[in-house]
Length: 116
Image (cartoon, rainbow, N blue to C red; front, side):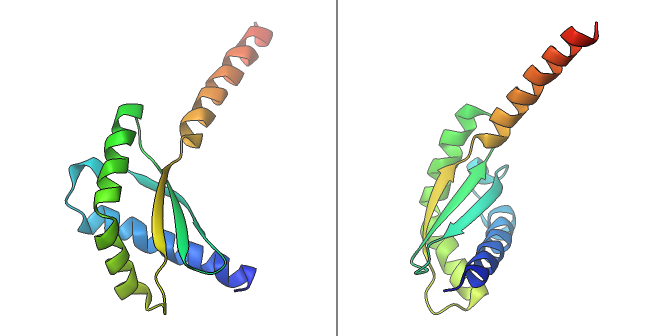
């Protein structure tokens, strides 16, 4: 699969997955997650989905909720995307947004030191 098609598939899965999580899943553990990124393998057999949620404690519960609903999510993606093969889903907690916020706070703190 070409890089262009792989990127396009990443975007399609991300968009559809966000809709499925937000509107179709009833599990309260996954209601406040944000799908950050999707990486589909070149052979289209596996997809790594990076998600974030506010709070470390909630991330564990959200990860469990997503893994529990993995088969249902994959089935919904298969119906929506009409692919020959729907990739296996692997959910990974992405703490980059939290880390970025911490770094921004540190930079702002240092900036204020030099302005005073």
